[in-house]
Length: 298
Image: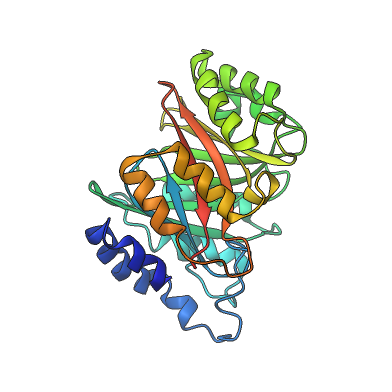
């Protein structure tokens, strides 16, 4: 983790300094675990169990990561409350969390909750990632506005809550192909333009082939449940030969500060395991588009 932050520091000195301070608090409970032998290898965030993953997007110049904020011995149902304590929202998050806490009650959870953080010229922002149990119903108002959320081929696995009350939902699908994805994109935004922009990035990531299966889909709604963004993603190893092929593909596709940040994040020598987790492409209602990925610190 420190090596990754050191590589980022020349490009994002203020963000890195702020992140180092924040991580002392955010990862403190993990570091003080009563199970130190598993504390740094228990998480579902990464393929080695490391409890932090860095995130990158060509859309912005920022330092982004997701962390576990509860030690391995913490019961899964308590993780949402523990993560919420690390939020820096300007308002009390509890009313927004109440329906999600009820959703998790007495359910088998995969990770409970994670904390996302972003440091940029606009300051620090935090996000709460919430484990959605299998078969859980989405909020009724959301389904009423977007009934296709009930599609049997979309299995909603996670929700992301932001301070501005926007909501991101993440699904996995075993049968999502390009045609269906672009149909969903047009239905979501009500216009074909975002789908056209998304299709160009799908060509880049998938080499003109159809989407790997399974793959994932996320959709973002503002506080009034209006569509804001859609992202498709999959495991990097499902479409690329190795980390170096991912790196060369993304570096050839982007430029400027986002490219420099990605280069720093991905610059470490191979360690024998995939360091890229998910890769994806996103688009918003204005047809702005971007590439993104998650990277295990190396």
